[in-house]
Length: 161
Image (tube, rainbow, N blue to C red; front, side, top):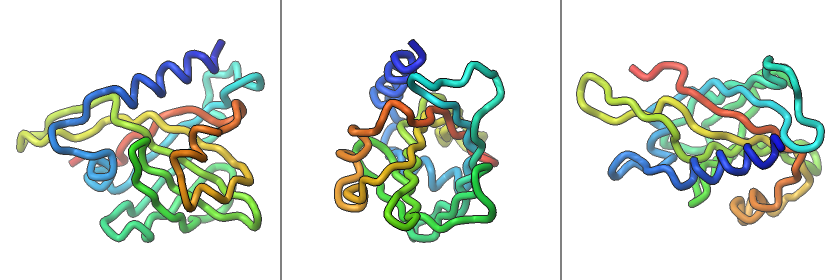
């Protein structure tokens, strides 16, 4: 049941309109740093209101290799590769033969700042740990094959101003 709701919300986020002329990656660059909250999806879904995992994605800048992730599941900031695609923005951390992929989907809540610029307040997001190294060649195809045990959640800008 929770998996069906998560899939519906992810598809709605993909279908939600972006601000005119703003790609998902550009909206992330405006945010620069995100704080994310994730819960288990699928058969082992969490029943708690508390998040199963917290994450900070920091230093999202024009030089895509500069991003880092700090997770409640590990110690310290980890460098990630960034792939902006039609599905969203994939942050890929290599761990031996496996990868941890956090995909930030389309913006689902916008706000207009005092200068009249549309800024994203909240992004739908998914996090998965798997062994599909093809994520470096085709992140969207790897995303579509994610297991039902992924984590679903959202990311919000640390500071919008």
